[in-house]
Length: 152
Length: 77
Image (cartoon, rainbow over all chains, first blue to last red):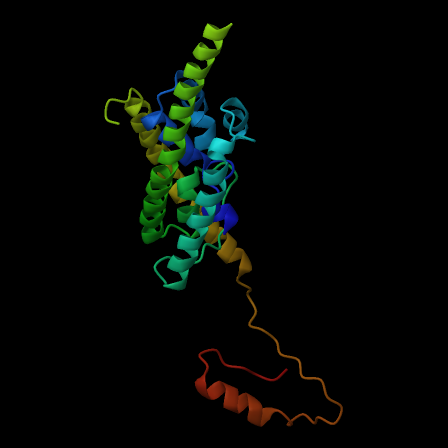
């Protein structure tokens, strides 16, 4: 379950985070990092993004990074339990784009592809609060620094 | 949201993913078929029944019973 539905782009739902930053992000730096790392992320290589943003040890994204894969896996488990999608059993190459992995792992099952695209859109929507929080933190931090300068 | 400058990049990425998925799909089908072919054996399974006091005709009834409902016929070796 983890390697099929929990991981979309490297580790966790990082690809969804990158797309969310590209659409809703207002910080120049994070947008640039997301832009540069979109292609590696599409082919499941997340190191550049994890270190560049940074995502690792960042309390803003910590909750989302844990929560989103768990939600993904729970929804997928429910869908498999209700026989909406078949169980993914076939082997998939490393580096297959995240949203295509379940489709390839079920030998080209079309409902699975539609379900995964829905899941990916849900991930992007779930990532919005983190990105908005990141934007706000940046503004607050700027104000704080300016105030600090005034006192000196 | 719709003012974002990055929509073009996302659309390009999506297009390239779809384009790459087309050969990937046929390759995946082919590989999975090959794997299935590799698993299929030429011989039908051989069932060995251990026993000390079995005569030649000991399992004839069992084989007849098996052959009633199965598409592949069984035989004694």
